[in-house]
Length: 132
Image 1 (tube, helix red, strand yellow):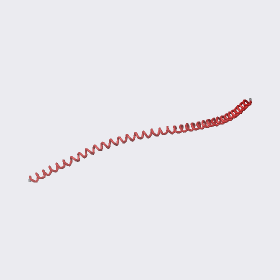
Image 2 (cartoon, one colour):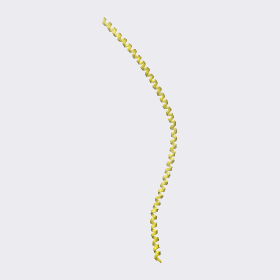
Image 3 (cartoon, helix red, strand yellow):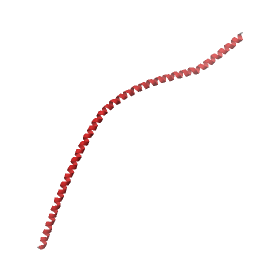
Image 4 (cartoon, one colour):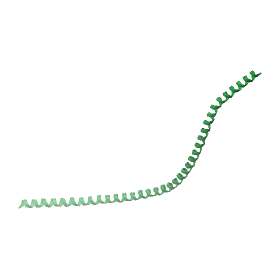
């Protein structure tokens, strides 16, 4: 009668040892899973904070975009005014150059006439000297 109890006791002891040995890796796996869950929770918190900062950045960019829309309109108006002013200046310079060219051409014509007259006078003078 004792032999079956001893066998059963030995079997229970072996089963307990096997259960402990099986529980060790399960405990390690549970610890690793717990650490992984903690890391996931931390990551989720960081992602939430990053999403909040990104949302704030979007708001800031919207504000900057609205400011630049006004700047773009003002800049376009300024550039248009500069272009118009430059066109006016170019027209004035062109007119001045044209008038200067015309006046220089007139002056050159008058100077040519004077030189021809002077040349004629010098020839008459030389002819008169030769006759004497």
